[in-house]
Length: 350
Image 1 (cartoon, helix red, strand yellow):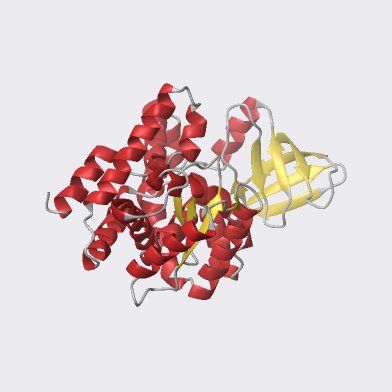
Image 2 (cartoon, rainbow, N blue to C red):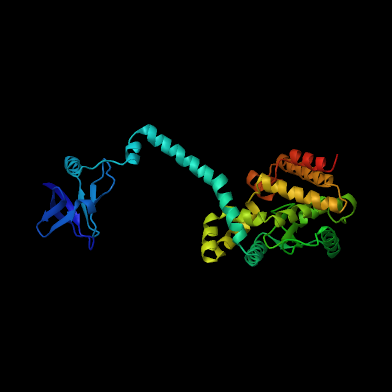
């Protein structure tokens, strides 16, 4: 007989029992209880060296054997044999290999699995949901970091005229241009899932100089920013980035049609998220195509990126904290400027 503790699964009362094992059954004998269970219907939970050996019975009750020699005797009577995985875990090379495999699986899931899953989910999201999400993102930004634009009506109209001139006649969804004052964000342009392009006052001031108008080559630089952001909208990059940053919310929204959890986190994800190198290249290629259609050289985009790079270096020299540069610098979410400028000038034929 093997001494054990028995719990009937209906209350927390502990029953002291003796366990007997024969060819077909496991029998329990105690002062106030006598039970018998088929061996084939009993599950032996994974035994650990310093933990009790647990028998789980089909009615939800369980039996625990604590004493080491009794545990060994019980497992022998049950002819218990560890599974392949358990035997593998008992040896440190196997455990180390399992850890490496797990880390690789997590890495592969993040770099390849999640993007693949996002690509499968995006076509399932209707334009109406994308528009609603973008509206909520903008509302969230307006209630936090963004303030109404301080640009004059004349400068805003000049910018809107440039936008209207290069905007394609047919777009995947309707696109529009808005301006916001956001000192903590700095010179920046954002493409939202609903087709809204947000350009900060600081970006306009950087391109033209404070108080100056948008004319000549400076207008071409501004057109390049708009064309690039239109590329992100055309290829649904903003939506993909949001989904990539909130996989759990995506799964819930896809199953139940409720994207409220994603919408709540979206403003932060939009500002801190980084497009992949492939997305940035796609958006640049779209911008090059659009600019050339309107007789604008892509080299002006290269000029803008290089001027932003110089601004970034000045910020570095001035001692602006790294965390602030990461959230305010337009170039922080884009490929290296030197490579990008060279590619744009090559597309311009220079």
